[in-house]
Amino acid sequence: MITAVRASQRLDSRGNPTIQVDVKTSKGWFRSLVPSGASTGLHEAVELRDKIKSVYGGKGVETAVKNVQDVIGPALIEKGFDVRTQLKEIDQFMRKLDGTPNKARLGANAILGVSMACARAGAAEKGVPLYEFLRGEAGVEGPFVLPVPFLNVLNGGVHSGNKMAFQEFMIAPVGATSFEESIRIGCEVYHRLKEVITAKHGPTATGVGDEEGFAPPIVLPQQALDLLETAVADCGYTGKVKFAIDPASSEFFRDGLYDLGFKQETRNVLTPPGLGELYHQLIYQYPVVLLEDPFAEEDGDSWTEFNKTCKIELVGDDLLVTNVERLRIAREKKACNSMLLKVNQIGTVSEAIAAANLATSFGWSIFVSHRSGETTDDFIADLTVGLGTGHLKSGAPCRGERTAKYNRLMDIESELKATGKPYQYAGENFRFPQNL
Ligand code: 2PG
Ligand code: MG
Image 1: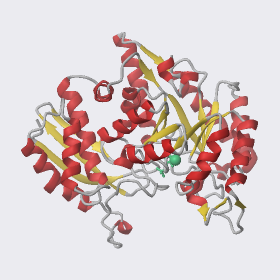
Image 2 (image 1 turned 135 degrees about the vertical axis):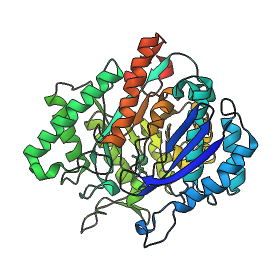
Image 3 (image 1 turned 45 degrees about the vertical axis):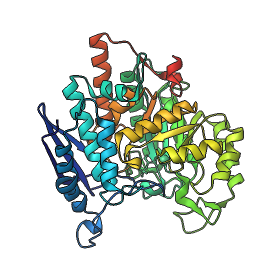
């Protein structure tokens, strides 16, 4: 039973306010911190901001804090839900209390904070680790799966001040034999990449972007992938490390065209088929195994067209926003074959799990994701293992808000090893680890 609910305004990794929620049960206090995106999808649940320009530039979340303290908290306590078994009911109750289709009244940030803290409380009351609790909620069975980390080591788009249009270039150590080894490989490549960038562009070019990947003065995706290839080869990991790209193309979609020069003085415009051709070339030329948001959320036809010939994992982020309605539309249109899972896009843990289960029923893969504005909350590490998704992205292996998730995953791996519970590292099977 929940006996107290507390909320506070705290900071995310960009120095913007976010919401922290504490839920109390007989086992103690359970905390969550809510992340926030920059390249957000049009159909995401509403993140409530105070919009008072003079305070944190309008980004304060005091209203959301008040909504937890004065509305959600007292109502939940009165209901007397059992956190061990009623996470779905708790989430459903908050949705009703909000009363809007996109959580615009109480705020998806307020609701999600409570939902995550309740999941933690539920796990503690049940006496199981959070990943095991979430696995139970999702009805997942079989050996536990440790994911392949997709480390975003080069940042562009709206996540950095360089001129590169594409937002994320990730390295995926699929050839490792354990999660811990995958992190070691990822870190070694990351550090070598810094040296490669220094040699090419000088030491001032090694500053990092919002997800702690480097943001050197490059423009083209080929330049980014060449840097990655060099760093991987120098470390002796060619073949063991694959690449992934999230261009976050909604950010440079204008009037039916894609402007790769959107951060430059001059336009560099491609038609949707032209952009599709560029992706095909990159996939042919480099070991790219995953492509996320290659086309804009309003450009569904281009997704469908590209999916006809795309042989790799095609992930819908802005396109799907972790929302079952959007998933059904995308499936109808044969737009993609994988879902990005971001809990704050939908605003409750159980709705995120429902979206994951629907994606699985479509035969799609699931890629768990952090947000560019993160916190030290490591919830998604447990969620990834709980759902057995086989891969996640949590930025570069650098700075606390990113490494918190990777560190937690190493803890989980050690714990599984120590307790003798069956588990496997997803490796090459990151898309469909249940086939392991
Ligand atoms: C994305 C994310 C996370 P943001 O586009 O996938 O990497 O960025 O949180 O800014 O939406
Ligand atoms: Mg994305």
